[in-house]
Image (cartoon, one colour):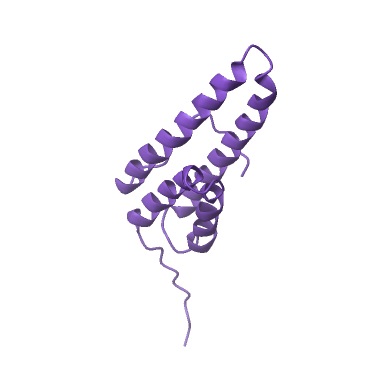
Length: 119
């Protein structure tokens, strides 16, 4: 008798959408927008189809936004350009996760622009 390990990935577009939308917790708690998607990604990447790709995109996006924020703080001293960058990061950080949640709900791959691939 031979045992075969059949690990079947389930398709759960709702969980993918929720994972994208949890990034918006930054605007409520200040820190949950990075931790919650990280926890969801690490716990479901081996069980949900597409979670690894979406999770990596989310974490890379959050790290990129953090880097842009850190770099824009000294730029405030340069004619206020850092303030414009902070406003841009806030707008992009709010709109892009919503767009990608809709894309994930439709079964499409994530599309985060201005993202540096750390992972």
